[in-house]
Image (cartoon, rainbow, N blue to C red; front, side, top):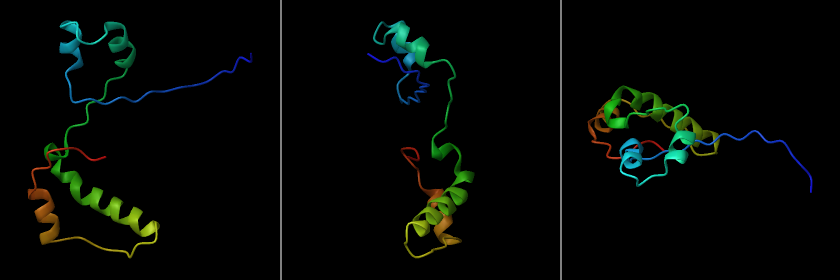
Length: 91
């Protein structure tokens, strides 16, 4: 046996209300407090539409960096993206 030091960080995400589930006894309290050390709330994209143009640029730059042709989206295309309901979040 060899002892090795590690430095581990866990980032966990959920759409469930873990506080409520913990109160109801449906989520382990010890795990809740271990995971909830530094809670971060990332609002869904539909609540931060002003981020869409920058996200589009970022994703297009990443695609270009992977060898796909460089593209620019602006004007009506950006308006349509910002008008979309965005039921999920950016992944």
